[in-house]
Length: 111
Length: 227
Image (cartoon, rainbow over all chains, first blue to last red; front, side, top):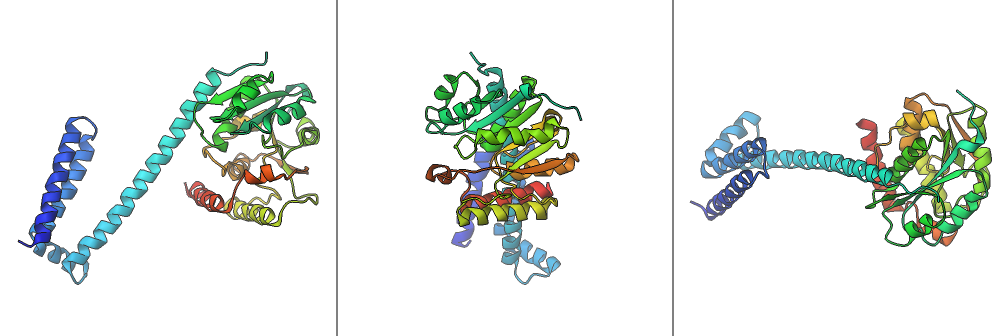
C-alpha cells in the first residue's frame, strides 16, 4: 500500500468517527450522516481500489481515474459552498427578523 | 389613491454609529410637524442615548443588521404608528429637512406612490468618483430591473403607506436602494423623482458605499435578480 493510501484512509476513518460522534450528539441530522458517510465511503473505495476510478473514467471519457476524482471533488465542493451560502443568507435574514421584532416590541415612544 | 394629510408623516432615520450628526439631523427634521422614528442599528457609540433623549420614537437593533434591515424596521414602526406617508432620511447629515415638504407633495396630491429625492436633477458639488459610483448604480439598476432612475442610490425617499406595506425588503445591506426600485416595479407603483440638495462633508463621504462595497453590492443584486 502506498503511503498516500494509508494517510487518506487514516484521515477518512478519523472523519467518519467525528461524523458518527456528532450524529450521536444530535449535531448532525440522519440525512447528514448518510450523506457524509456515503461520501467518505466513496473516497475510501477510490483510494483502496484505484481501479474503480479507472472504470468510472472510461465511462465518462476521461483519461485517468485520478482526474475523475478531482473533477467530481471540485463540482461537489462548489455545490456544498453554494448550499452553505444560501443557508447563511437565510440565517442572516432570520436573525434580522428576530432583531426587528425585538426592536419593535421595545420601541421607545416620544416623552 | 387617497390624499394624505401632512400631520401623518413619519420620518424614518436609520442610524449606525452617527453620534456626531444624529442630534443635528433630528433638530433639523423637528422644525416640521412630522413624527420622527430613529432606528439605531446596533450602534456602539452614543447614537441610541442621544436619540432617546431627543423626544422621538426610537427602535433599537440589539446587533448591527445593515441599512436595509434598519429601514424595514423603521417602516414597520411607522405603519404601527398609523403614518400615511413614510419618509426615509439619512442620519449622516447629507439631507436637508427642507427637502421633505416638496418630496411628500406628489404623494399628498395623489400623483405618486413613491418619491425619490434625486441628487442629480440639479447641479451639485458631488465629487466625481461618487458621481461615477452612483451612475454605475443607476445603470445596474436599469439593466437588472428595467427602470431608469437618475439617483437610484438616494437615501431620501417618501412612500405612501399603501406602497410601504407592499414593499418586501429582503436584503439587509446597501443594495436595499435598488431593491426598493425593484419592488416599485413589481407592484406597479408610480414613482416620481424630485430634485434635492445633498451636502457633502468629509464626514458623510466617509460613510456610504466605497468601491469594494460596491462590487459586493453588485454581486448581491445579481442574486436578487435571479432568485
